[in-house]
Image: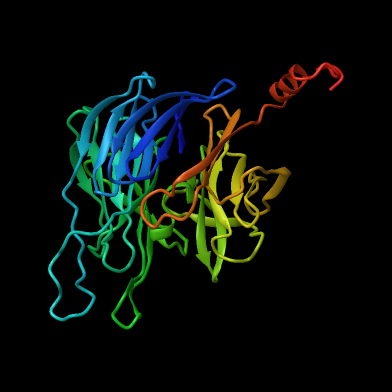
Length: 374
């Protein structure tokens, strides 16, 4: 689930026997269905709107990303395809010896994110076993014919996968999970890196991030850049699920400033996260009680809970997205576990955070109270 920059268009991935992306208008009440952007057999793993909102990139479990023109969301138009032939798994670190040759994977964990209107970061996260991470930048200035521009690799020459991107400052977050040997020993530690894609033909590594992140688990809505100078990411630190707040005011020297207190003390108690457009608040899904809590993060060393939790979901919340104007917050609850791709969506809720609009709506449904009395 993903809101477009027009504050109205909502893209919802529907994974099943035949996957699809549905487009909805949610700027007015009640929401209304606009179209089904595409139907495809592989499952959807990631989606991204271009900063202008014209192009929607959708990644699938066949390691292919498809681009759609959604300038008119009621009638989306297919554009080009990003397919860099990374559909092979390497199992060189597993027995038998000598290593097995590359072979097709059962499924992939593709992540897509725009660094600007003309550049798309596409990556496979990897899982530390048979799936090898990979990350590349693509020129989509002509979205009918995307062209590869660069590949991201760590200084040791080993591959990393794309996790998230900031289109405002053209930053890319990349990483790889720990790699394990045949006896379960760690043979390659996890890596999380911050890159600049200001020149997409020659991206450069800025700094490693102070995060004990497992990239295989942390794609999508568990990592978010703010519109200010910070980043929030769910990490596995000291055996606990923690949302770390990182200061990126000096991208070459990122610093962990604070964290959101966990409500249960166990990993995976958190679901999705998203910053408000002004960067002052962080919406966090607490999946121990299927609620959404808002946190004031203007002082990341002392985050403060805001108001009452938003309740109504009955299952784990897998996606949260603010509208670009901050008026709407949209959340999606899963219909159940899905080992591949985005979990199936059961319920999407649209929250209007404008108190005046909520007063008008409440008073319009009753004759016993006026907006002035409220």
